[in-house]
Image (cartoon, rainbow, N blue to C red; front, side, top):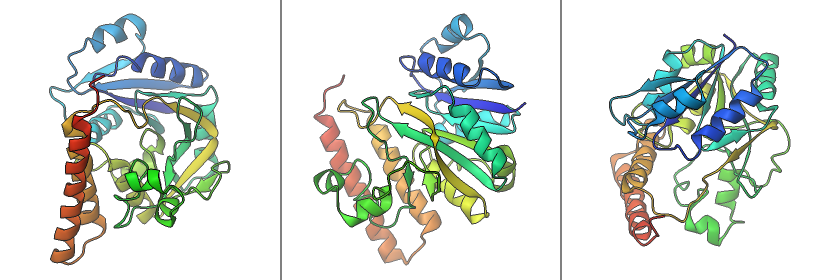
Length: 286
């Protein structure tokens, strides 16, 4: 098997069909398999797949086990030389799969490659980034400081905004919204860290690959559209909490420091979570 595609589903029936159709078109000439790992959605996804996508295999979890654990199950139950890990709210262009596979074949030390990702309006989603430092939680893609002061040096360093994103480039990490990974590298480095329930598992995975002397590469000749972005709608409080818990786990894992500074950083991250929870409470539900 050349390519296995793993998509984690949790109540995403509004976008999943378009994602699956785009994958089928982009990989039509290749030997592939596609699995959808359902985190106990209870939304009838099995019936939809059986009716409209009979070639897609469904793996059902008995609970919502989080993104990393679901991806790992999908990887473990497939056999492709390369694995495409995608969010169900992404769609690929018609040449994306062949372009990403072509780069992996031409560069045997490449572990992870990712496409140029844009928002539905065509604007660039900064999916290729530098490793986060102690200020990244203040200057990330959605932070108020980045929105208010988009030209500040901390956001530019983290989001690589001084680069046009039009050329192939080895980077620190790529957004997990759409990644293609070499199975050989997964065997050596290991799967995603399941202590990340949701968010930050992608940056951790890329960091571990690079520490093992693999490369992580942005390949703009492949394109994808991400249909979510920074929504103005209210999100589940758990999403905000898990995002910030993931930040804390990442920094404890990769940036150990003295207990006082660790406590201070943890406190600031959770204060940020509290501010976002309060702000989220005033958003419309839909």
